[in-house]
Image (cartoon, rainbow over all chains, first blue to last red; front, side, top):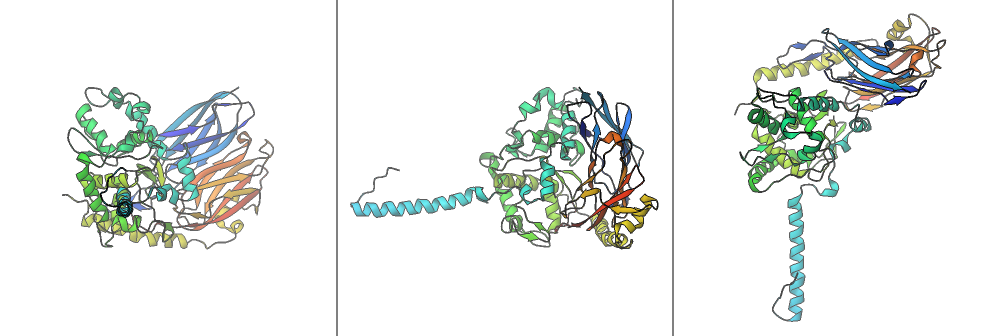
Length: 105
Length: 272
Length: 156
């Protein structure tokens, strides 16, 4: 699973920054059939959360209503330098994570 | 042009005028031969998209095709096979060595005489240089490496060789392009040459160019190759879908590339 | 030459296509469009509290040429202070087989209540974004969107 995080290279303390994340995942709805006519079981990312410098700043409960290879964008207040870390779990129990360092100065 | 025409001055003038007319009419014929669609009417598939999809393609972060490109970057330097060779072992930094390369594909491999697309070229390296099994068609690995290689041709204009040892492939591709097929009895040209720009239900028919591929298609919710797109068209006209890797797809791809020559490459493109 | 077409594959794909209208009926069988504030799916999120229009701006294109991935953005007017902020935002579809599309949890650390994502829509419908504020109030915005389907069948 490939995932991408976009945050500013550097931020000032107190600045509201934009965080973007894109995760490779089929977000299989459970309403499709394969070539042999068998239903394809649902497999979507269920929960996703974002921690910044160890503290949870955002979370999302997702499902088939979110498109394949989910994209999310939200904001946070830059406090101190630290990792912005995403982690997620899908219906099959597969967990993924990705992090990127935010420099606050 | 200096040409001595014997006879009187008046006759000379008349002959010159006739010759000029002949040359200009030849020029019209030859430019029609050179281009299926005049250069100033050439429209990339992205021009037929909604503004939202165009914006997504232009967004270098959110374009989901970039997930495959990123994976391809990792694969590029991952050793495979007992010799421990990676793509980078021979081709070093793709940002330098692959720049503009995909814009000249499909191209004939000088040694074997086969027409190769980028996918086949990658798999040729795998079997001949790395001594490992080729990637499966439409596998994430093959799509990723192809997308990675093609990403270094972004904005390069398509420019393929169609003469010499490519000519037979090109002519076969052209024949296929204008041949009706399927239960709908349609040729590629009937939609994408004679009727582009018109509406088919809610969508506008494109000119059918290959410059975005491998592309992320909303219909597929995934990345897919040009071959998959051609298969989709075949199924659309209710024709038999040829198996992946069929020679017909490559011939057609060469003709399509020539038809699109001058269009900038967009891979990883976004398409409906 | 070996061809990919098989009778079995065709039947299977046809079954898939035939299943589409059933899927659409399933979707339509749900509650017809009520005012968003009265929609039970909105009410379930508000746990009985009054859900008012305002403060929330949901941005969706009015027309999508494919329902598989449609950009959606939700912005809520809020100081996002410790005392007064948006706690959660829920996106509700009135036609998808699963009406709750996503729930986002945020807080004063967010700085702004401004979220963007890409949603999947099973046809033309109304999408509602409901925001829960720290003072216990609920606000919403709703947008209607037309989702077109492709003219060409794709069984690739």
